[in-house]
Structure formats: C-alpha cells, structure tokens
Image (tube, rainbow, N blue to C red; front, side, top):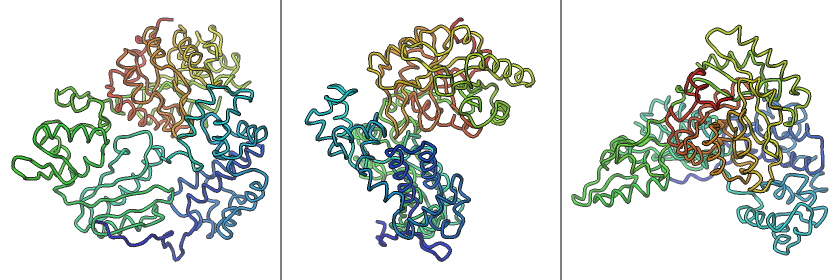
Length: 593
C-alpha cells in the first residue's frame, strides 16, 4: 500500500508555492471565451482566450509563478492583457471582465453551449426564446415538449437531445485527455524517471500504451533499486503540480495540465505481470483470465496461479506472461478483446504497419488556405522525415477561403507547384485539393479543374446537421465520383469536442470498395478518422486505406504516428495502406480517369 501523506496544494519551487493551478487558469480563460462568445464579441477576442487556455494547459511549469516573476509573456500568445488577468485571478480569485459578463449572461448557459451540435448562437436563442439558462432547464424544456415549438427543432432533434443530456452534467461529460497531450506528459515523466540512478525499468501502461484516442490518467510501472527515491523523484519533477501520495510502492501526483499520474514500483520478477495487467484493456484481460481458467490457471497482476500445484509464477516480462498461457506476445494496440487471443493461438496475428512503412503523405495544407508554411517549407520538412512524395491539398473556396482558392487561382497554383516539382531531385510534389463535398454530394470545383490535378481528396466541411439518409447519400455520391481519389476524415469527428455526424459508414465503405475510392485515416490527433473499428471494416471490405497527416504546418507532418497507431489498432498491415507504396505503384491502385 502507498501511505497517505495528505493532499498538497501546489508544490514548493524556487521558494514559492503555486496555489493557483494551470488548470484553474485555463478554465478561467475558457469561461471568459465562452462568455464573450455568448455575448457576441468579435471572434478574434474569443480565439485569443481559447488559444491562451490551450497554452496554459500545455505548459509544464506553474503559470501563476511565471506571472508573479514577470515571465508569463514569454509563453506563446500571452501578452500584457492576459498577464493582467492572470495576476488578478491570482490575487482576487476572479477576473473583473468575467464578473461583468456573468452579470449579463447565466453561467449555466455555457454548459448548454458546449453540448454537441449546439454552440453560442443556438444556446442564446433557447435562452432568449424560452428561458433555457442551464442543462436542468433544458432537460425540463425537453420533457415538456417545448423545443418542438421552435424553428429548427422537431421530434427527432428532441429525442437526440434527450440522449445527449443523459450523458452530461453541468460539468460536462467525463473528462479525458486527447492522446497527443497525454503522450507528451508521459514521455517527459518516463524519460526523467529512467534517467534517475535508482531506476531499473520504467514503462507507461494503460490506454496510453495501447495508443487509444484519449486517456483518463497515466499509469507508470517501474522497478528500482530504491523505490522511495524513485517515488520522490516523480514528486519533485517540474511538471508535477500536486503530490497526493508517496511511499515505497510508488506515488500519485497531478501535473500542471491536470493529469493524474500513478507510479507503481514493483519487484523485478513481477514487472511483466503488472505491466500486462495495467496495460489492459479490460475486455482483453477478462478474456485472458477466462482462457487461463480453462487451462487450470488464474491470472492477476500478482502472477499466474497454477491450480494443480498451488504455485504462483511471477514474470519479469510480458513475453513470459503470454508464453505461460500458451500464446505469443500480443502488441498492446491489439489488446481490446476483439479476437486477438484467438488469432494469437492460431498464429495469425497480423504483421502490423510501422511508421517507417509510409512513403508519402497525400493531405497537407499551405499558406494558400489555412496552412502556416509555404509549399517549399512543407517539402523540406517531408524530405527530412524520409518521405518520397507529398500532395498539397489546400482547402477550396466553400470552406471559407474565398478568392484565395477560386478555380482561376487553383489553375495558377497548379503551374506553381509543377514548376517547384521540376526543381526537386528524388522527391515528387503533387498538386491537389481538399475539395468540399457539397450537400448534394458534388465537389465544389468543376470536373474540368479536378481533371487537371494530380490528386483529389474530398471531405465534408459544411452542413453537418443533415439527416443520416442525406449525409450518407452525400458521401456515397462523392465516393462514386470518377475524379475523387479519396474521402477525407469521413465522419467529421473531433475527439472530445465534436461527435461524428450521422452517417451510415457501412454504405460509404461499400460504395468506396465498388468505385475504387480510397478512404483516409486522418492522422490529426484530434480526429483519427476513420477510427480503428471503421478502418478495420473498410480494409476487410477491400478498400485501400490512406494514412495522411492533414498537416497545416511542418511540425504536423509528425501527426502520421497517430494515424499509424489507429491503423495498428485496426489490425492493418503495410499492404492495406496505399501510401506505403511509391507514387508510381500507388497510381496503379487509383480508379481510371
């Protein structure tokens, strides 16, 4: 057992105590952004506060301490105005502008605004028209049938809203952290602990090790020559904000970003048992235990009990755990209780795709639309990462970029990219587009322009709230279009922020397979769309899968690792993924134009 030492608010650093947490500051900025948006403020102000909240959450040191020391403006996107607000929050516990806005706008309206499919305008309309000022008020209005009276609502919308409300409280749904943010914290912690002289083995476990879409907390398993020293080392890391418990079996802490971290220090001969157990998933472990029982054994984090002898086998590695149960080691990404044990027993586990298998990226953006870098800069970054080809697929006009991407401008861009490609040695730069799929299923560029491009990926970027039947017909029509090579982020979801739109993916996959249209795993860590379940179904239906970064900057080319993680969770091999091939080889897989 880890002894309880009492909760510490903040941690001592440079002689100060950071009572105001980063999470509290970020929440205050998010609330201010919400209140300003409900009040109809100019969008740049709202965006500034949302960006500031993100910066604060991702900062691994105390932002309050930085503000007190006059160093907060060193953080990106934090200027003097925001510095003043942090200092006011630190000194008085509130921000004056937030106090004024709360006097005008019910705070409960923020929870309504954050519901899937809502937003500030819809929430404000419910408040103005029927007095809905909280989730409880909205529940009462739904039960009374009052929403049916409003334009834009109806019986079906009311039923969908009833389901959404069942999953939400005034504080929102259970909070999870998108994998990219959790992974950054885990890598910092694991690297620091491995460098400690007392450390022997240190590994992250849990859903993070399985590369799930999001993570609730961090589990770290370790062995050490001095467990107490290693536990103290975790508590003293700069990324740690609060120490909850520490002792000779580990520690529990929280980071400045609000993530809970649980370090378990175990005996070396038990490391494999504990790592396997806490990696999960629950469904995998349950199936493993049931299989073990049929063999006369009981599996737990403490070891493998042989019923016949009464002896418990403790394993230093996971390979030993699975071997004792008559199985080969199973990659963590497959441990979801989806038939992996049966496949392992038959020797049919797939040879999963690796990041180095990817030869090209067929979805990226530049300053022509909403990217941060030029085509030349994106090419250099792609070459540094060992890629052989890159498609520039800037957004089209109906995505909101107007004159920048008209058909005439796109024709000019074709010539620019082709001229740049001629100057490249051993690398292929392609000119394409991410065309918007219009509500009727047609692309928002003419066929004449699309035919001039090297590559066309089509995605839904507008009119998300269509019926299931109409949204399905819309994407199916795009998949059947002879000049569309691939469907991008097919469900439109944004993890923990926006649910997928209502679409029958089985019909989309069927249409794509028949037409020879590829479907993308969009590797943006906030999307990972297709998800692993749908990607597996698509591959099994014969659809060629793409793993694309959707990079809007050079750094975001590294998003590909999240797409590869999704593909691995989908049981995909390199052969399933089209852009593991050279561009010349991939062209042979495309539908004939």
